[in-house]
Length: 351
Figure 1 (cartoon, rainbow, N blue to C red):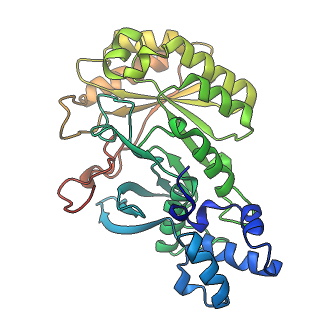
Figure 2: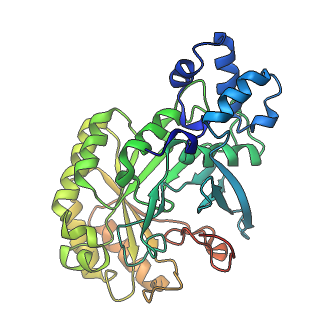
Figure 3: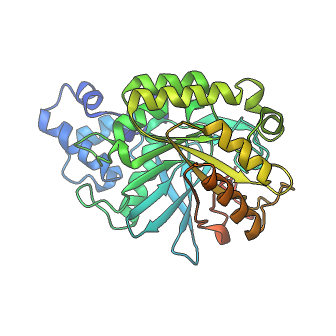
């Protein structure tokens, strides 16, 4: 955990804030908490006395992240460069849909998982984000998009940006508690998806935590031989172990698990691969979310043509496996799945 000064008010639960402000009238706690959830900086907290502002500012930052730059995609997508208090940059993506607006958030600065198709891991892991830095992304975008705590502009959240969420387990689970708190932005856990490359012990911990988010398993291969080449995590956690943990999660929560599968030319996209995947998932209450691999400049891996996508989907369907092809959003601004990173291409002065 970073020292206190590196944290923000958005890292604190209402209970923690109450302890911090125990020497002040109780109604002041509510005012401070509301201001933090509205993403207000100290200069905007005009209803608070100067002594409370001074007390707080000596100990905590006001907001956890600031929107440094915005890139607008042709499909209405917006990609944000978020500036952290220590000067690091992370990315997030706002995706408008007819059923609500989704924000993809980062959970780490960089990533240490080393997946061969992902930009986030190119320079390794710098550090974990705090719960407030993850929440701060949501609060900042909600305000930018004209939302309030009652009428949210951000209605759905996916933990699929930079980083492996379960590699930052304690801060991510605190974030889930903060974001779903009824007096805060109060986004239902049912509207939050968490994507993991398969940290088996943490999947089981999450299943036992009572935090019933939608679990998404980044599988991307039908055999350990293929998966180990593109996902080093397979050296520690084999596919069978990952799927056993996913079944445990379903048994404990009743939430259907999503299986992410990026189609990569010449690697995992043949009809034979589809049949092997179907055999793996037979009898499991899951849904396969297919992704045609998005280009990452530094990587040599490529996606597949439409005929290959159609054949793969048709094979899964014939084998009784529920599947869809994810609509790719934000490709033109480097904001699609697998493209988020800790440094934006061409952005000078970022870390």
